[in-house]
Length: 214
Image (tube, rainbow, N blue to C red; front, side, top):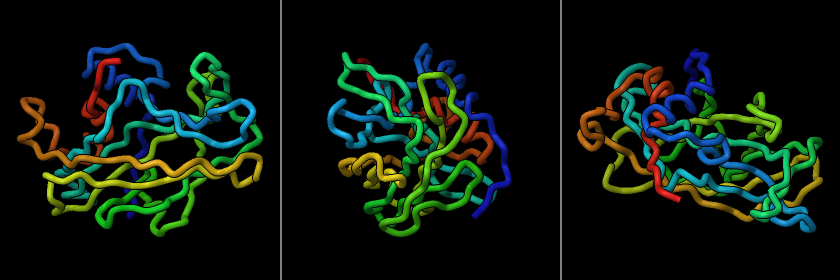
C-alpha cells in the first residue's frame, strides 16, 4: 500500500507539546538506538522517558487505510553523543543500523511514512535513515505502527524487533517487544481520537500516546 502523502515530522513533536502541555526533548519521546556499555559493542534500545506502553493506535476513518489503527510515535533516533551518567553511549557515524523483525502478532503491521509496508516476514530488516534533528542524533525517522481493521480492541498487540548493523561494526541488540492498544473514538473522550483520516492522524497522533510522569 502507498499513501502519496508528504508530511513534516517536526510537526509531530510540536503537536505532542501542544496537546500534552509538555516541553520535552526528542530523546524523551522517541526511541534511541545506542550502546548500553562503552566497552561492549552491542546495539541497545533506549526507551523514551515520557512515553509508556502500551502505545495507543487510533482508528483511521477514511482513505486507503480505512479501519486500520495507527500511530507514528515514538520515532527513532541514532545516538551521536555519549551520556555516561545514564550508561548510554553513542554509535559510530559509519554504522548502518537496521530494525529487524523477530516476530509480529498476526494483526500487526509496520509501514514507512509514505505508507509502504515494511518487515512483512520474520528476519526482514529496514535500515534507518532520515535527517537528524540535532547534533545529538545520527538520524531521525518515523515509521507507522499499525494493526489491521476488525481486531478486538480489548486486546493488545505486540511486535518483537532487534537492531542489527549491516556493516558488522556492532553486535545485534537483544530482542525487544513493543505493545500496542487499538483505541476507538468513544475511548478518547472529547478529543475524538479514533475515526480520523490519515493526514489527520499524522498531524495529531503524537498527542495520543500514553504519557507517564518520570
